[in-house]
Image (cartoon, rainbow, N blue to C red):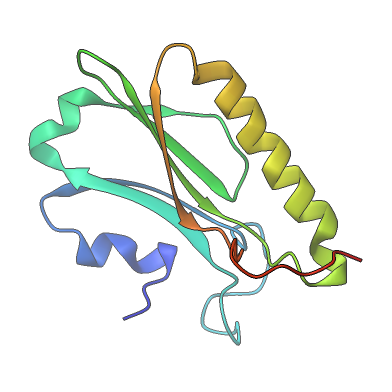
Length: 129
């Protein structure tokens, strides 16, 4: 099932969530959009809400939260643009730069877990043009 970020709260009973959508600033109403571009979300049970802190780092394709514990964990959910499309190179590079900045900022103090839709195949070897 595909769930848009705008509808996410309908499916997350007894939970808290953070969400961002690539098309949040798009002036087209959701019912008129042929298809949403995508987004990212983190969700957790309300029972552990006191352990989770929202982290403002990252643009509209990156969502971060800190899970406080003996060793703090930085949870990063990312929706990368497709690298293969010529017009997306700038967005792809910007997203990588943001991830690098987040890594630099938190790598000495947090365990970092990155997940999401990376739109990349690490096995396939293609020349980048």
